[in-house]
Image 1 (cartoon, helix red, strand yellow):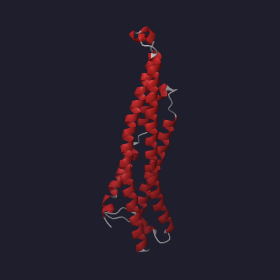
Image 2 (cartoon, one colour):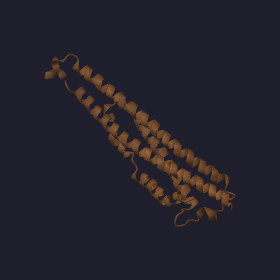
Image 3 (tube, rainbow, N blue to C red):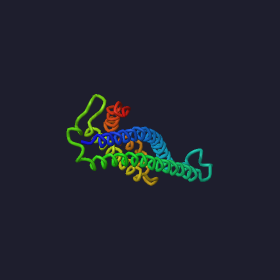
Image 4 (tube, one colour):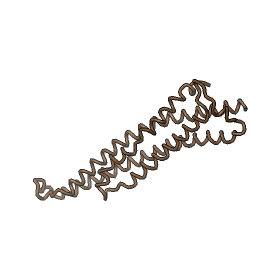
Length: 202
């Protein structure tokens, strides 16, 4: 086994976990903003449904000419604005996923290129401060898979939302929240904790 190859692989693994840690923070922040936007979208859908069901002509507001059309127009503009912001958030989440995937892919390419040099004993050995190579690769692969799936599911949900289906849009906040995977997030948090000492060593 080449110590130079092992050293290089450890450096690649550190870089990958640093990327994961930094981008997890960005991801969490973007998702928090998405949750707020989803709440706004649900509220706007409720207002549009209420406007659709109420007969303004039978209320004291009847004297305001074309009030219902103007309110509908204003609410529709607000919906479009929120959907545009959510689309921007999807682009930000895509960048996070891409950054993580690129680093994970680079680590696996390096590992596969040097499998002849890295024997099984080396790959499964661990210490108090250094998890095994096989464990770290597994954690990174799981994290990459998690973010890929999350992005696809959330993007697919957004693509179903249109002002033409107010009921679906009203339910969007709950559907969005249902995509949250506490276990998936916890596994990534646990992995970052497991490599915390490893990342501080050279």
